[in-house]
Length: 486
Ligand SMILES: Nc1ncnc2c1ncn2[C@@H]1O[C@H](COP(=O)(O)OP(=O)(O)OP(=O)(O)O)[C@@H](O)[C@H]1O
Image (cartoon, rainbow, N blue to C red; front, side, top):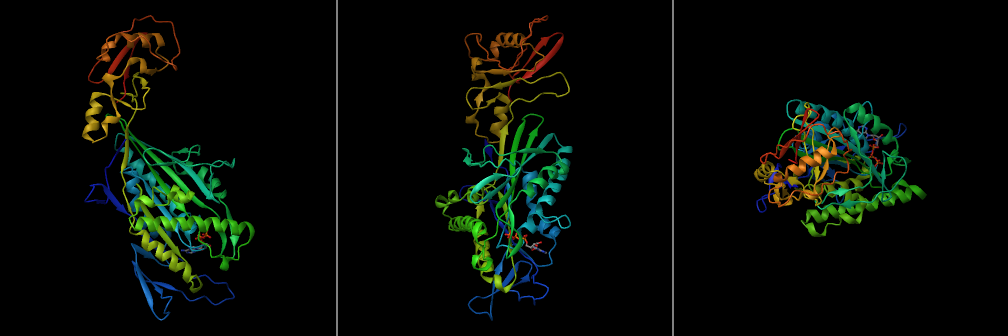
């Protein structure tokens, strides 16, 4: 069940929220060997949002490109993170909406440096995770919301998806759910509670990434990697809304001109897989740029299928386009600038995914327990108060079944082990009036997960309340309150 809560712009025709991709440029210092003269640079920043490149047709002239911001050779990791990514992260932590960031650019231009960095100069990933844990701790301490994070870390190597958190070298296929989310069934998802927890899994996993020396980079990424952090927030009080969002941090492999790299054998095979997927990425951007939503070739590569959410999807997205400034890289630079320019016009439509939580204890500290009630249909069940709440929030309530219309024989009851099955079933039978509209007392209640205890010393007493769908069962001088789905 999805609702729209927030975005930057509103589409005047559809009234939907829109968010343009923020495109930033970053170029690294000119590199040269100790015994060689440094090459001239083909680019320079004219001001903090404009970059000038030597015109390929007339080298006496320059061509200007304007972006959100241009970070020059002396830009710090802190500055790039603070300007490009940090402002976007509040959409993830506060609005619970999808956020994506990716680094694009030719080989050796500084993508991994930007995304991962080093111990001395940490990049987006460590900075982001520190920020997320600090921010949600602050948000949750003053509210009635719990927040949980989980992480997955994948790489796409030669058009196959690999799980970097599981070294059993399985391959994964991609699926799409009926809300348009791209899923990777079976991929490892680890719950992480703090930065140390995250590091414990992330550092060894990042050593699994396929890297190799090429003539243009000592440690060149041979695959695209995506770190996915999922956030689930859960309200502790009615209406018990649960929201979920994902943050994707993408380190793309760089395009490689094999006349320059001189790649052979496996390196050449890797390089052609990288170039092919980046070519499809380029086609996706062109199609989106032309507003050709129906012909976007996402399915032509695993990379674009996984980035479907980030490009023309439901994410707030920012892209850092990394450039190598040397004159010998001018053609790659030109291609990257064209890609960056087209990406700037892509419009995403972010929204918050909200669902009503199943059953929630009314008070975790009492002996109040929760009855988990499942309905055979996939539609969750809403109490009247939740139905009201859902209508207020403009949720598509037709997906819900009013509890009063639920057949009791569909209700699979899961209860806390302290309440014997017989007591519970008896209570439900006695509370036939909770299922208003039913002519007879329920005959069959399935309860797979309840252990049978014959010691029923206190007869069950039922206090159904139509308003709240709460009922109590007395057993062994204790009173248990069960609350149906809210
Ligand atoms: N802004 C920068 N300042 C200083 N050094 C940098 C900067 N950006 C990149 N470097 C250095 O340049 C080299 C290449 O960078 P990096 O490996 O990040 O490139 P890449 O774009 O990820 O390449 P590939 O696509 O081949 O994986 C590394 O040694 C890195 O430390």
